[in-house]
Image (cartoon, rainbow, N blue to C red):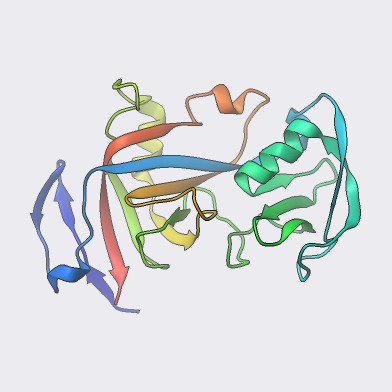
Length: 204
């Protein structure tokens, strides 16, 4: 596949671009968020029954899928996927509901890949993205250096889509894999950056 050079950024400055100007992607001013796969064993509390599809090739099913901690079921709905105690995946999408699966999936049915898969409304599917600068936190502080180093060292590909209404212009969501503990959403990894700088190659 040929790639169209969209924007080249060095040390946070735009140094040039090639191709028609209409194809250029703004380099800076991006909001960066992350999403993850919830892990049932890190959740406790009141259990709730979940209904949906027992297989992937089904929409808006109403079969019993099991009983799970309420916080796990909510995390699956928020993040799109979760690994159950049995090793299977409980996935969710706005147009399909819950279903059981053998892998965490993106919105096109492909397995999510940690530190590769990403979603962005304003970028063509298949675009390759590097995070050049993490920018700042919404509070105006410096990002966690270990998190920023890992996210900027990764090669991201736009393979996923936002749930309608959650994306928006210059917003990219990066998939970081499974949560690593019961307080994952309070850790530096569950983060938001603003005024971030991206380096984007879009497929022509």
